[in-house]
Amino acid sequence: MYVAQVPIPPSSDRKRELMDGPVKAIVAGASDNRLEQLLNGFVYELFFKDDLHARSLTLFDEAESAGLGKLAGLEGSELVKAGEEFAATNLIPGARLRTMLSDLATLDVVRIVEGRE
Image (tube, rainbow, N blue to C red; front, side):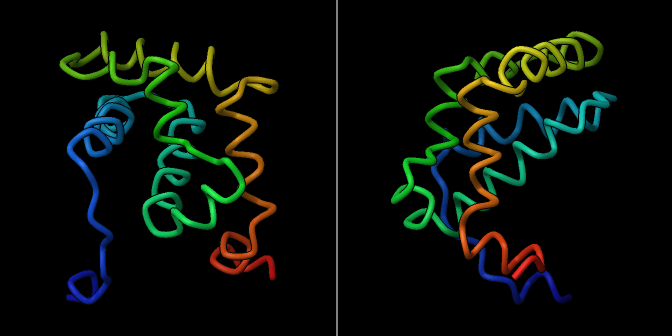
C-alpha cells in the first residue's frame, strides 16, 4: 500500500539488467554484503543522479565496465559464485567501484537519507 506512493525514478533497461544480477545472486544465496551495498549505491544513483554525477560517482557505468553484466543469464550456484567473485574483485578496498561506494557517504543527500545529518 505505501510502496505505491513512493515515486520511482525511470531507469533504462541496461540499468535494470545491472541491478538484476546482484539481486538474483543474493536471492540465490550469495552472502557477500558488498553486493547489497552496490545495490544501495545504484538506488542512490537513480534517485540522486545529479548529486552523484557532480562528484563523478557513476556507479552504473563503472559496474558495467567492471563486468557486472556477465551475471545476466547465470543461475543457481553459478550465479552465486560469479556474484561473489565480482564482489571479491571489484568491491574491495582500493577498487574504483568500492571507492565510489565509500564516497557516497560524503554526499549530503546520502547522509540525510541514512540519518547521519
